Image 1 (cartoon, one colour):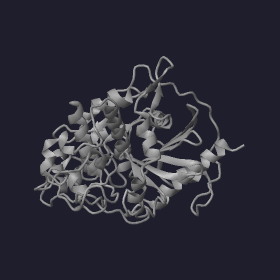
Image 2: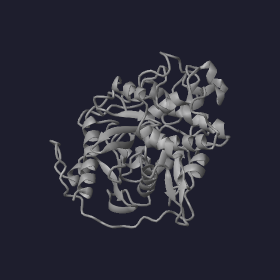
Image 3: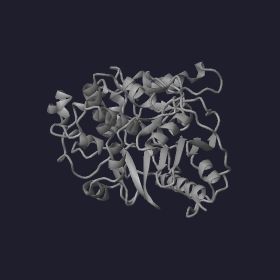
Length: 426
């Protein structure tokens, strides 16, 4: 998330500009070879309107992906349907009800849970219950839980320098940064997360990691790109949203455990929460998982993930016993962080969009009526909403035409808050 919050009514700009003499620049000419009515979705256009409506639900067909295994005995989710569609959503000048918010924010999937049960669920065709959807930066919160699990087992020290685990980083802009610096996105490296600028660092990184066609001179692979990053300021300063911090964190986790990320998520998060379906994560040309945004998962399994966060890192096992997936202090320490974390956010460019909020352990937080609300957020409208005070978990998967919209983000958060108030009112 950055200050670049263009409204979806603005013209869509191409994210990638393949070199003019490359095959990628001529790829659209091959549309006629495909079955009638099927557009050609490629690495050069998959994040653009109208292709993203399809690509977000078919990532394994766009680029290499690794499997994240689900559980043989998944956590049951009983259904207790409640009509929430006409629940009023006050304070918005563009929508009056839950149904209107969902309709006007390109919703692909919507889920509300309370007390371990599904209260409301909706899919917009062609999205269906079994289909995996790209969750973008919700992936960051999943990687955070891997880090928390490793820390709980004594394999990862959040206060250790990053080069303790990845010695190669000692010669990069990350030299001297702590793992905690990555977790809270307070590194001092030079990295612009301006999604609509094809030459910003986030887009060069995406070309390097296989999310877009490589241009001449782009590094091959995400980790080689990380090693090119230069310093810009001191580590530990103002919060600045940088996806590369999560990719570096994922590298640290893999080295600490000696296991690749897809298997770390399987063993330490996905199976322990009782996920029903296998998830997937895209991989770069060198086989490294894209930690910052590459996970695709089903709506209900994201609901299970949200319930684990609600329960302070616990999940019910197939025997009905609670198990600690992530140390409780990993969640509670983020819900109630040190003062410098709040200050680092207050001085950032994100404060106007999430006033009073903060960022800790790769989670977003905003003030609620009776305590903080935890958010896992991804561009193009992905969200997991967790409100401990009401026990409500909400999930929304979307395909906004542009990466960000302040109006749609705040409206979605407010919609979930109104739902929680409705469900807990006398």
